[in-house]
Every structure is written in C-alpha cells, then in structure tokens.
Image (tube, rainbow over all chains, first blue to last red; front, side, top):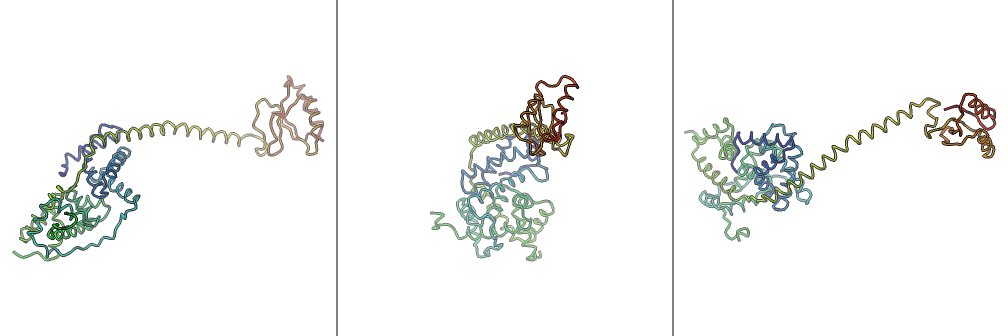
Length: 193
Length: 195
C-alpha cells in the first residue's frame, strides 16, 4: 500500500462528505479505495477470509451510517482502520478468542542474529510471513499497520487506542524478534514444510 | 565522530521503522538523520528495515472480494435505506399518536366536577345520577320507566350513572318534571344533575 498523499486524503474527505449526504456512488468509490486495506487488516488478524469479508461489509455499512460524524481530526484512513479494528475485536470476542493479551514488552537480543542470515531471510516472502505470524498479535498488528498500511506512529496509536510510546516499543520488540526468527531460517520447520 | 549514547540510540531505533515508511514529522526525521551520520552501524539497520518493509508488503495477503463485495455492500446499504425511511415515516406518526393520548388524558383530568369522578363516556346522555345503596332493582326499573330513562353508562368509581331520556325533553318544563320526579325519590336517587 502506498501512503496516500495530502491530495488523496482531501479527496477521501470529499467522498465522506458526499456519503454523509446519502450519495451511494461516493460510497462505492470509497469502497474501491479502501477494500484492499480493510480486507488485509481484517484477514491478518482474523485469519479467516469469510470473516474478513463480513467485516469489510460491516465497516462499509458503518461508514454509510456515520459519515456525518467524521470530525476530520484524523485522516480518513485512520478513521476507517479504527472502525475496522473495533469490528475485528467484536468478531474475535464472538468467536471466543482472547482479544487483549498481556504483552510482554521484551524480545530476544538480536545481537546473536547473523546479519547475513537476517538479510537472506528478509528477502524471502514466505519466511517473512511465517515469522510475522509467530509474533504476538499486538506486535503483529503494529508491524502490519506500520509497514503495510504505512501509518505514522501517532496514527497507529489512534487506531489501536494506546499511547504513542507503546506503539514505538512494540514495533521495536517485534523487529528484534523478527531478526532472530529470520536469521534462524525456516528450513526444516513445520511452517516451511 | 562520537558514538550515540545507548538511550539515544534506542530512541532512534524506535523511530527508524517510521523513517523508512516516510511517516515521521520533520523533527523526528532530522533526529534520525543526525544519528545515521553519527553511527555507521545504523546504516545496516536502515537497510534491514527497508527490506523488512518490502517483505511485509509482499507477504501480506490482500484477498480480493471485488465485485461480489461491492454487490453485497449495495444490498446492505439499500436495506439500511429502507429501514431508515420506515423509521423516519413512522416516527412522526408515533409522536402524533403519543401526543393525542396525552391530550386526551389531560382533557379527562380537566373535566369539571367532583374530583374527576364524573363519567365522560357515552354520547347522548342527558343526566347523571347516583342511586341509594339500598334501592332495589325493581324500584329503580319502575322509576326510570316513569321518566322514559335508560342507563347508558356507569357506574363510575364514585357510583355515578348516566341516563338517556327517550324522547329527550323538548323544553324546560319537561326537564323540570323529570328532575322533580327523580329528585322526589330521595330514598332511591341521592343525586341528580343535567349533563
């Protein structure tokens, strides 16, 4: 996902204003812009395509009903991803998953990770995916929001409803864990089989 | 060049993922750039983070529900529209109905008389009466027939009955005769009044 420019954000705000007036076409335009981002976010957390698809529909309907309440204090993307996150949490609760976990804000020392092995691992998409999936959910979420959704740390803090410092710390520990995982390689591991 | 102290290095390392994605504000960006010039080892970190960003983007599955998802959204929105139209249409009717009930109750409460104990029911009634507790049904039947009256409503909580006269008295003289007849039997009628 490329980070939307200021111009894009203005266009998205204009779409929201039209949606608030009941313009279905504007909702469809917004859907085209955000469907991949909402689906990717929902799917990485729910790991269930049908549930992610249901979440997408719920989020778009929520946007339709509450576009007039968008106050413009955040970017449109941040607002939409916040709605998406609430919907994801609802769905996780309904299926009995633990939503809030005790996050151990620590990580293995990455000094043991050989730099060459790390770089070899990070160049392999399957290794990256496997290592990201092994992160605790909250760390996986910040990695997704930072590197895929390309949100700033203050935007991630808004989406996750937590302090900015927490976001930076989670990304820091996630990165260290990823280094160790990537350096260890996945050959022979069940995930790579 | 002097090395960064550990606390500053850690703080910069925490900012670097966002430097790579270009989402830092100017102050944070400059802080990272100064650190990159000071500490060579951070260059390797920068290269790793750039590769990690690409790796995450490549590894993230983006399921495409495209047209199916769009069609589903259109259906949901139309359902929602219908629901809100029905709600908007019904709301004034419900408010009106609630208002009418309120007005009706107020009218009942404001009816003149003895503690609201009067009857406010049947149309066409001419008189309100109360009967003596020990009056028999036969005595009352005879008395009411003598003035061509029938009970059309009651009793109220206070024991009031409404009577209709058939035919209704045409003039004051006829009315006086009815009232005199009923009032002349205090053993049977304890209260009588024209509507």
